[in-house]
Image 1 (cartoon, rainbow over the protein chains, first blue to last red):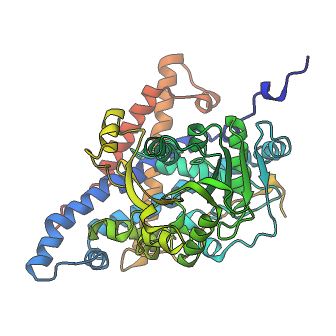
Image 2: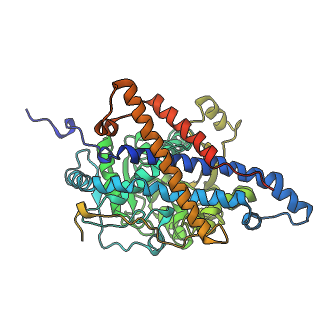
Image 3: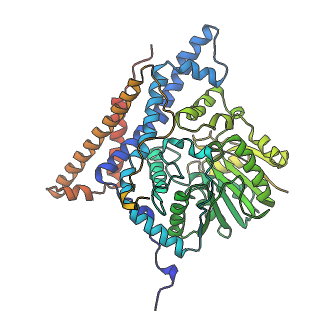
Length: 398
Length: 96
């Protein structure tokens, strides 16, 4: 008797990535250099600022009052220069350290992704639009210092950038205390949603700028009866993400679309999410996308986006820390995005102000269940964004 | 368009490269230094693999090095070594 398609295991595209002994060692080193910059040197820089630089400027009556003045005060300090150069180089090396193994695996990865897109053994789908114009805010620079970012295609049916961004991301977060597990954000926010809205049962979920869908999959696990949709402008990451979801046994409908204007009908979704998304698009696009979310969200629905904390939410020093990426990590919209109040943005997009929110939620993988219940009762604060918590904003619809 | 077997991914990033030092040669030197630091770590890990194979097998081949998969305890030991190594190599002078 022939086995039904469900009984044949779906191969894992990620197992085709086979770095050599030395490439693996290099990736391990780069993860640790990245950790050294973003944890150890970041801490040393803050201490140098607090204990030496700020007191000195204060004595001279020149205490920096905002993030830009703090940055200016640090520009010539060795603690800032070496923190910055090591962080910048580590970021580049994340992608460089995985590219050779991706190049070798590419023909087999493409064959597998093509086969899974034709068969959809798990029941998802992949809909690409070769005529889609990739916005200039995505193509003008290589975001995150990743050559080709999510969109560049070098051969037919290309998945290379999916693999480069996925494995480069693993090197990037390999030694980070809160980002080791791909999908930690989706997991944390769906955990919060289940507690915040215990009776909420979405029928359709949409993830904007889904890349490989790794932060969408935890929502599918949290709401197994919902249909899941992920959109992105980059074809290689969608092909790659589709192959992963089919392997994971989670049906996801991926489509290549610009979130500013999608082809979904009005009120089609009752949960709209995104992770690390809005700060990568222009401010003009942010406003259009939130209006599109308002059009797509059904009555009774919830919209929740994980984003960087806005300028007004954190201290001037923390604003300096976050805005570093604007010029030094090829994320040109970072500062101007963060300068806006997300609640105001929701209101301008047509969501009720009293139904819009912004808050930090704990990282569910590391916070602990008991402490989480205390957080839900308002007895305990969430750790800061990226340090054991995640910043979110969004709105509900009547 | 090239076939998938011929793809060579670009190694250069599109966008203006920032300089953190007055002399951009120092920015370039930092890249050399960090790449070299990484290569020393790679070499050290290869030696560690050779030693572990000699301990367990009494002999070593290139194929055995390639096939070697560290267990979780070994991986942890190696991570601790890399951490301590970087803290030594990237030791900062006390601020003046």
